[in-house]
Length: 295
Image (cartoon, rainbow, N blue to C red):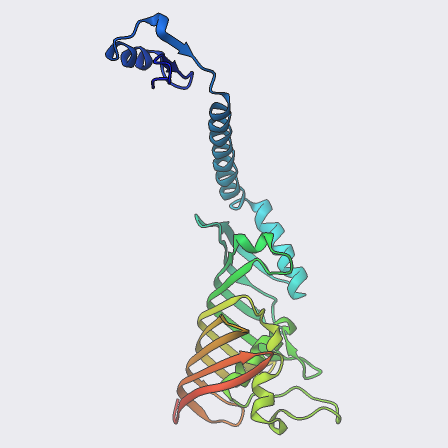
């Protein structure tokens, strides 16, 4: 480039040969070349290149570390702490989008039976990077559960096991409007069939994080006696739970679909669809359809 005084300005960032080519084309001699140390731009360029290299190294390292047994063990222990249940994790890794993907999650074994209380083929945790820098916000933006098989079995005291799944499964069954076997309650506690529809829909909604989207696909849920007798069941459960911002309100939209099932009173149904809107832990039924009949 040419300076205001007419001299060719040479920047160290440009190859010397290219600079002299430009100088020759302009009819200038080497004595007209003014070497300028363009330090600010040179430093910024080096900083950006170095930062990009560091980010790429960290990105690749994270992908590789996520495939190690040590990382799988760390995630497995974290899940045990959060759920309070013994479980086994087959495989864990980060995908190219840095989502945490768990495969072949199972456990714990049911009492007196050599079968796990639950199995999950694939579970994905998706993160929201901006939320990491926002105080008070949960960085987890989406949880996807695919191919789950959950068995709730009554123990000797009549309580459902594994306990970690009792609350979320109760919420799903309430939203489905189905009668499930209830564990023993104290005389002061209401029975499940004594609750109003609004109470049943709104009970324990806070078990799901408000800012997190939930997706469930191809999931079966069964309530069983300890000997394996099925008391109630939901087959091929599909759930889409999406947080919505409708100023000044924060809402959750719920779309629950169940291919078929059987309630605790022996009735069977097919093609259950339920749509809800949740605000301030209060659920409003937007629509519901079900085909009662033979399974």
